[in-house]
Image 1 (tube, one colour):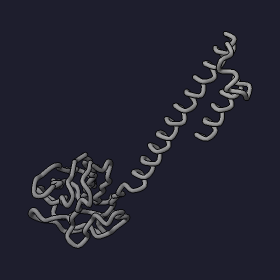
Image 2 (cartoon, rainbow, N blue to C red):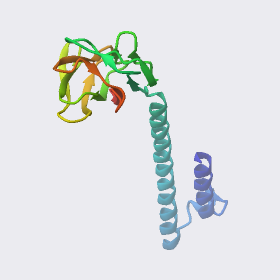
Image 3 (cartoon, rainbow, N blue to C red):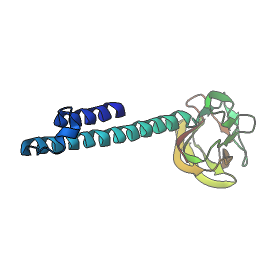
Image 4 (cartoon, one colour):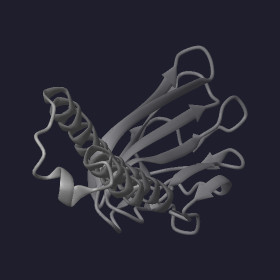
Length: 203
């Protein structure tokens, strides 16, 4: 493109010199010739500017594409396999991995460990199978309660859920633990007791 612009500029210059630049320099130019030469020269300047802007735009697109492809993917969905006893302030240890993109959930210890800093969406669901019972579960980040899930019903099975957006630093941990209630087990027959997390935006 640059070579084309240079050649075009040379052609315009030679066009008005008639191929005999040394002879034409001293000859008076026609007013129309001068205005047309200025017009075409400015047009070439615009072409050069557009070429520069186009190159910058291509580089910007390449940088954005590189960032998109290199971004970390974190997506977790785990649940309980069966009705599970739970008492005191015991931690819920989900034992079925539906997906664990980024390997961020530790099934053995019942912990989500943030692999990168960023904004995360966390969703917890709790289900009970016995009527006239209730339970509170805490969503805990590094020992501090950041959310609470309630489930309970006087006449039937029940499920409750909680979703929250939270910023986590790398290696921050999140887990679910019993807080209080009359229920001493989580029922898996009429709904899934589950934990879900997805990275919304990496820092």
